[in-house]
Length: 495
RNA sequence: GGCCCUAUCGUCUAGCGGUCCAGGACGCCGCCCUCUCACGGCGGAAACAGGGGUUCGAGUCCCCUUAGGGCUACCA
Image 1 (tube, rainbow, N blue to C red):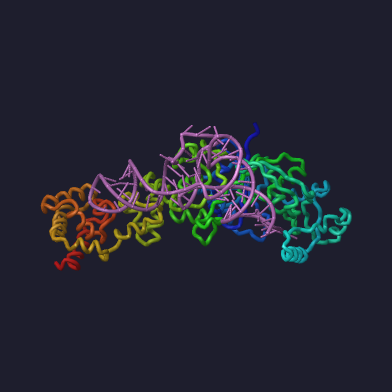
Image 2: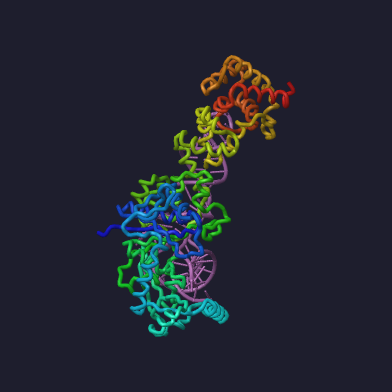
């Protein structure tokens, strides 16, 4: 059997869209599942949309997500390099190749030169629109004899090359997720193949490159479905074997529209900054549009590779469900080592102004305890600062009504002074000592359970709920505990 | 407008003619665990868009309607 070769071919127009990541992921999974090759090609045929740094960003995002490819465009020491036997992998470097094939098409009579101006085309479309017709090129230049066209080009006239589609011809192809598709050429335009600036359009470039690069399966978003007949026709015109098509359902917004900026995060970078783990993003994305045979929800990348197939890809577009992503991300955070989450948390804690480099160096174990204390209660790394803010505050204000209510309890002064008392007996606290201390307080006051913990919790955190209390004590340390207790005694107990 | 695609719980989905009074997951609700929160465990509410066929039998096949999405560029 022929080796599977697939590609992800984004345009460098900015960042890597989360929907694009899923397309890349499915390509990747399919390639790995079949021991095939995965290629990254850059489709930069629209000079007007090119964004500086976009290629680098694309590659970095893919790398962060753990999507690795075998051929194409890579980043080495910050420089863009190409690897593989089918290059160049950046379309703007392949202009002469497209020119050659477009010439062949013209010679064969499958394409023609068109000299129509932008103005004429606009006017034509406007006229058709008013008449209620389908906006379509009217084929004016179709009948210009080749010799005449060549003379006009020689004279320096601007031109494009258009695909010469036969009239009323059914183009058929099979799609692995959609099944058989038939579209009549009467519903398709004589697509521009080569633009007046000498660049190919997507339609020409994708066919030529996929063929030349030996691509066996074209796996892309379903927005390409309507233009696939053009591509199929091109393969036929060139006499090439066409690839297998796989059109993936769209990843949608809550309003069922294509996922777009302004409704929140859409770039891989955004998700990274929001504190999502790459394996969580990958795990979640795999599930939008694909499902395994059993009811498994949590997958390692190896499991995904093993279980993935296009037969189980859905036809319907799926809404990007942040709640489920959060759940998956939380799962991975809980199952990660404290060390890893601590490393990831440090930049966020620095940004919040809670810690600095010196702090990290001197109190790394303390930071690990801090992270361990809240690790199970978070969905994203970015939530950490708000979760631990109360630890870093010098003084806390108690505004919570429930908390204020707790402080009215009869045993509150007894408990708090007992804690201070016991604190005198130790020089510094760790979890063990904090635990022992609470036990001591229990013994000396006779107060236990809720009546003991709640006043203490409120005094130290200002809230009636929060993480493990013993950890909070160890985190705060002797000095801060005393400060907070005395604050409460003064401000709320009039002691 | 034309063409193409799609249609199961709020969401992601399982279901490829009978084993479906429709299964799993997120979210939601309740209970348990527990100083609280969270985690975890257990349980619950929640869907086959509508109408025609085909068939002994339809969520599953066909048609229509409706709804949604995509495409309709010298953008990808």
